[in-house]
Amino acid sequence: MSCKHKYEFSRNESYWYYCGRNNKAFVSTSFYYCEICCEEKEVTKQTSAFPSEEYKLPDWAKAINKHRRDLDALYY
Image 1 (cartoon, helix red, strand yellow):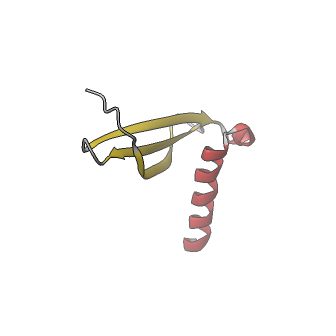
Image 2 (tube, rainbow, N blue to C red):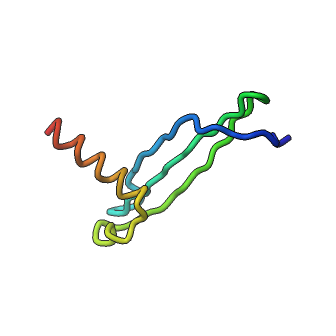
Image 3 (cartoon, rainbow, N blue to C red):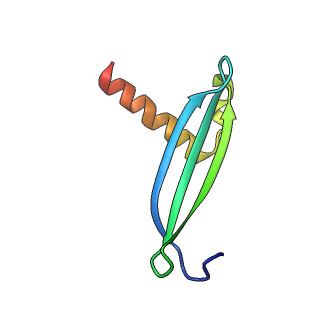
């Protein structure tokens, strides 16, 4: 059953992982919530790239990569 009411943005979960020898897979999942029906739906975006092709990534995947680099700089 799908809700016909307006969904509000709830949260976003983004991460990357190695898939294969040098390939990185980027995943971004956005969650939306309907307060009237108490239903939640999710929209997932996925892409992957080799390190030499990271300049071709969409902006949302570049943001995941940059955030991870910033975290690594804080701890290492």
